[in-house]
Image 1 (cartoon, rainbow, N blue to C red):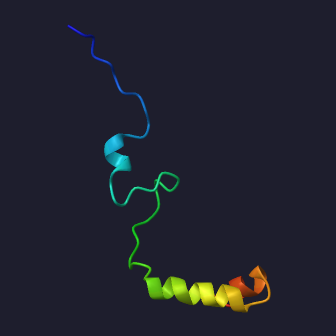
Image 2: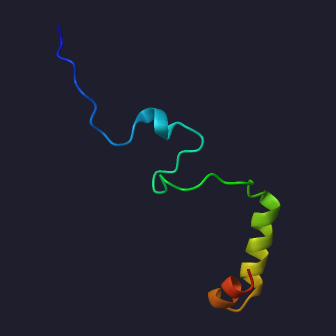
Length: 60
């Protein structure tokens, strides 16, 4: 009979395979709405049309 090995890892495989698992944001609040592809495209366009990142952040 093999001795039982206790899994002491913080991150479990079942957590990693979960759709909503983000390892570096364990305690983040649940997102109210999904970010759409259209929203991401709008942000990319804005980022490419401003002269620097500071203006990008100020325009959000």
